Image (cartoon, rainbow, N blue to C red; front, side):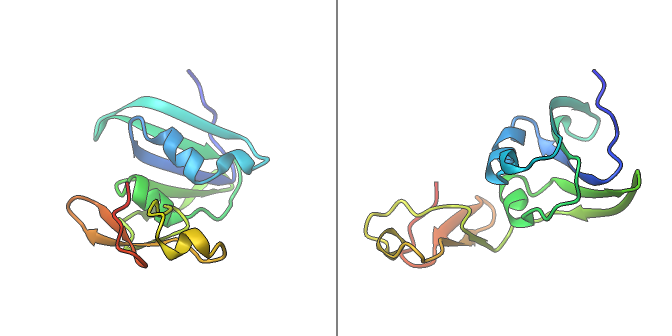
Amino acid sequence: MRIDAIQNGIVIDHITAGRGMELYNLLKLEELDVSIAIIKNVVSEKLGRKDIIKIDAVIPVNLDVIGYVDPNATVNIIKDGVLTEKRSIELPETLTDVLFCKNPRCITQTEQELRHVFKLTEWKTREYRCVYCETKAN
């Protein structure tokens, strides 16, 4: 299989195998009018298998979403066919409008304009809780 290199765009690399589509959906990449390649189960010396997403445009991407899905991923910025920036991703302390509170009594259920904010409460288990009602995220 051959996937051409991009001249100007973003490559999200080192995604844990099988998580590429989840990342694609959470980043809402289907709304973009640019070429996007999702490469699944690529052989990797470091990970064994990995997913890669190539976006043929330099666009803002939510690094918190990437960190939530896979804190070991990397984001590479390509300009004029050259890697100009490589960003390491970390597990975000706060997630806003990425997760949605399922507690029917939470204020976010009645106040539609209120943002859904979750805080990282347990780093080892990657546990997030709603800042308004303390409900654990799924």
